[in-house]
Amino acid sequence: MNQLKPGVYIVGAGSGDPELLTVKAQKIIAQGDVILYADSLVPKQILQDVRADAELIPTGNKTLEEIIPLAIERVKANLAVVRLHSGDLSLYSAIGEQIQAFADANIPFELVPGISAFQAAAAKLGTELTVPELVQTIILTRISGNASAVPESEELSSLAAHKASLCLYLAARHIEIAEAKLLKHYPADTPVAICFRVGWQDEQIWIVPLEKMAITTRENNLIRTTLYIISPALNKIQQTRSRLYHPEHSHIFRHSSKS
Image (tube, rainbow, N blue to C red; front, side, top):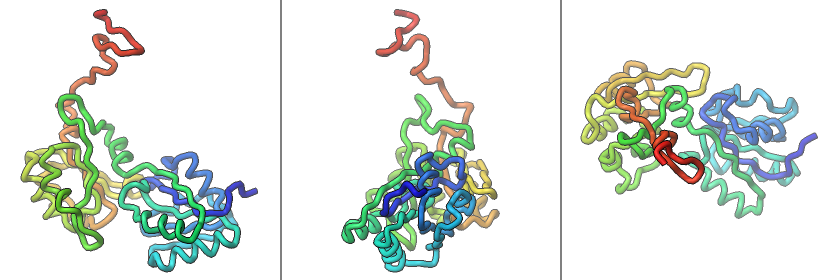
């Protein structure tokens, strides 16, 4: 019996691995009456537990003006609608305009976060992106493209100046420009993880020096669903130990060995 109340459940499907869905996301997907999913970005295995009688509606070929009325119509028919997005809702998911449309129509909605590609990629790489005395900041960004422009104050060259762990989304089609901007601040031998379709069955990851980021992208015909992680943290030789669990470090729950 469906336990979901009528409404729209905007769910982050994560990077593509169904085992990385949150428990809440799994339950909602399995119980939804209608699944509106971004079929160009969400792999079919994410839908493996949907109800046999659920209505599946791919939205890769639809505009917002088509998607919103579909969802509203189903909710008014007393159905639970799952609006399934890739990755995490807080990153490049275009949910802002959907939220506004549902609010204007007095349609109840709920947001369910997902695992972002940068988190799944770091796990696959077996690395921590914040390393004591080396890098303590993670920047999630993109390069200006046809879909939307990046504010001038967040231009890639200025962000690269921080030399942080930089996770670059939506850049494969403009990779030569991105590489040139990054090389203004990062050393040419800075490790870059090129992560294609992380969590999908055909996932591939390459680790190359920054100066080979563009050529590796072109050699492998990468044009979409590719994440770049540019970070000195990928050079494991340089990693130093955190003080958090050091025997000489004390905090409210533990005294140091020197005290």
